[in-house]
Image (cartoon, rainbow, N blue to C red; front, side, top):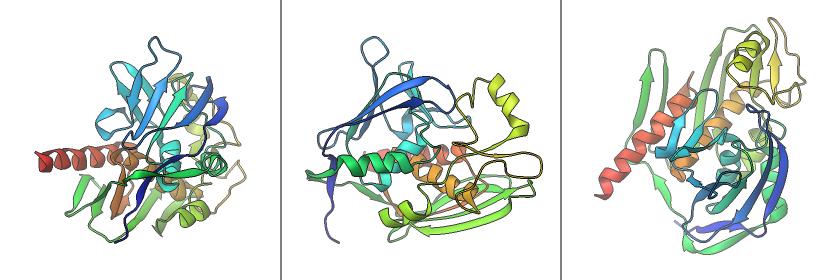
Length: 280
């Protein structure tokens, strides 16, 4: 197989907005970084500008989003940005943020992909590390599960079941390439329900959400203008990609049924624990 080299951005990227859950203003800069740096978040608003590596072992919460933290410094809702970095092939970058949450943009990964394309990408001197799973890993709980199987490529098959009359059971299967991701997944936005908004806001979540950056459902219909008939499941696949990029690039077939951030994180931590053990 042809060797793939690591990549970083050709130029810095700057973007400002508000966070989906915090509603806080944030100035974000994505900066080029040296080989083998990985993805590193930098909290420029905190004393000493602490750095938080985007690693599976640093996941500290999966309530409605994925949070990574180190020594009390955290960034949350990293999954949409991580999905864009994964599928646009950015191995190394530093992400400086003036607040704990990246900008929500339009609720998808599309804006981040466009910013990366605009900045350009440069090939680096080290080979890309791709972890090809050699055995199955799985997380089960009742009728929900997520598993990754050995596979020559990167593929996700997802089943979503939702009681809402406009949703029901959805299935989506995709062979992941940059082109397929940009066409089928990147623009899919997160989904919210009117019945949950009050409770979420009481928890300090969803404060930056709107009818434009979230596909909102009331009891029987969709209030937002959808981009896809099955936007929910496409966004769930986007979340899987982002959550699993905390492991770096993967080769395998992910099969998920009714899973979410908590399952994705458990799977990532399981794989990482196995990798560490194998390296000993």
